[in-house]
Structure formats: structure tokens, C-alpha cells
Length: 389
Image (cartoon, rainbow, N blue to C red; front, side):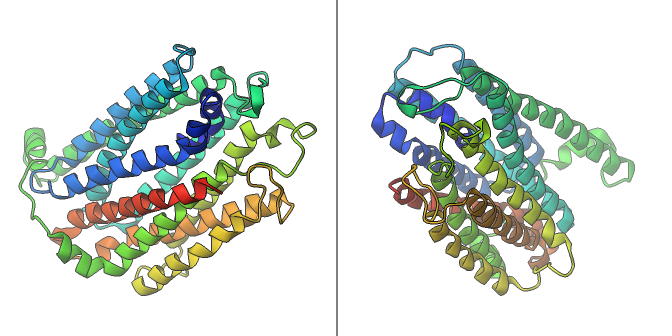
């Protein structure tokens, strides 16, 4: 969400070379470290956890965060780059806190049903969440007149950034309304089937004391899938920083607007996320489902590191590509890298409920979410190396 708005942030940080150079890595690091801390804390708070309330809290935080970001595009335009950078880090922290609550709540809540397709649905929803911001960013940029920036630091109008962040606010609000409605229906259906007596009983069920399952126990049963999802997302975290530095091989002065940095960077994110989204559907095919072969899934996650050198064949910082083709960059590198991420990540998460006991499923869902965030954190730390590319 934040990295797709890189052209706008570049325009806000154009007066500070250090911030301009490192803000993407800073966003990733603050995001993943915060997310990891929240996930670690919530993993050890299983006994009386109310997973629906964690999900609702996360959506409320998102609404507040993106509303403030939208307002910042219209007000306080004259504040220094350092001040705005501090504000942005606070917003990243808030959004990451919400992400931690949502990931823990969703994966635990859904894994408890022991229907792997439900977990795949959550993974697909995350894929859609990656696609929509990129589309919103491109549309918002194209919908306003082009704006020339000094020194070429960025060309995005504040109006397009405002529309972008308000879109995120609107989607979060719709998700909140939808989840509250679905959660209420779920409680009422369980009450009508006699699982609990009445709606009040359903409310109480959210707070029943659950079996606490140790992390070592879960890792022993899920080690291949857990390490697979960790490696998958650790390798993936190289792509945001590199993507924000690669521009089209076409001349900026003569190319159509879609291939200028303000649109081309979000376009590259969109292609990656489209591949990721399609990849998350692939495990639904019985011929491609690898849930019963966790070791193979782990080795597939390791092979994805082969995509990283391909980025250095592209037009990083406009220094000139080794392979002079936007098609190669967008579809061979971005799309296939995203496709492999969606497939391996979804396979790991869907397989969690298969390898644990029935009363361990909710804990297994939270644990796999934790391993995913560990991967993001490790990858974000390594992304500072990519920032120097």
C-alpha cells in the first residue's frame, strides 16, 4: 500500500537525499518489525482470545491511518521532509499494528473451521488487496494533469495521492461492515443449531478458554511448511525496493504517460500482484496441490531466490538495462516472481490444518501467520542491501 505510492513520497522527500534514498527500506523495516512484535505477542495470548474483535480493531485502525494520510496530502504541504518522514513512520507503525491484529485474527479464526479453501480465500483476499491499491494509484495519477517536479524526484499530483489513500479508507470501511455482518450471522447460525444457546451464549463462546499449544509443538509438526513460508516471504521482500528503482527502457520525454515513473512503478507493482493473485488460486487445482508434500514446498520456496539476479538485468535508476525490454521486466521477472510467491505462500498456509490435531488448528493458523511475518522481517532487513543497488 505504501510502496505503491512511492512517486508521491519521492516528491515529498525531494529536499532530503538521505530520506529519498532510504524511505522505502525504512517503510518495510518499521512495518515488518512492528508486525512481528504484534504477532509474537498475540501468539502467546491464545487462551481467551477473541479473534473477531482483533479483526474489527485492525480495520478501525486502518480507517484512521489512511484518513490521516489522505488529509496530509492537502494540509501541511510546507512542512520539512524530516517532519513528514516522522509522520509517515507513525502511519506505517499504525497500519502494521492493524496488519498484525488482522493476520493473527483471520488465520486463527479461519483455520478453526478445518476447511483449507477458507484459508486459501484469505490468501486470495490478500492478493486482491495488493492489486487494488496499484490500480487505484495508476487511475488516480492518470486522472489529474501531469505535474513536473524539480530534479525529476517525482511527478505525482497531491490530488491523485488523496484519491489513492481515500480509496483505501473506503475499502477498509466496507470490509469492516461486511465482517461485522458475517460474524453476526455466524454466531446466529451456531446458536440456531444448538451449538450454543442463544446469541448471548455465542458471545460468551468467543471468550472460552482455549487449549494453549506451544510454539515448539507446532514447529515440530509444521516445520517444513513453516520454514517454507518464512523463506518464501523473506525472498519476496527484495522486490518492493528494487521495483521502486526500476524505470521503463523508453525515453521519458517521448513515452506515453503510462511508461513514465509516476505510472510505471505502480504498473510494475500491479503486474507482480496480479501474478501473486493468480498464484494463490493454483493450489485449488488437485494437480498442483502440494499440501501433502511439505518438503517439496520448502525446496520450491528456496528456488525462488533465482529471481533476484534478474532484477539487475533491468533499468535500475535509469542507468541502462542489460536486457532492454519492458516486457522482460514486467512479465518474466515481475509476473513470474509474483506467481511463485502466491503459489508457495498459499500452499504453506493452506496445509497448516492438515498436519495438526483438531484442537490445535486455531493455534496453527496463528503460528503460520507468525512465521510469515518472520520471513517479512528478515527480508526487510536484507532489503537495505537492495536499496544501495
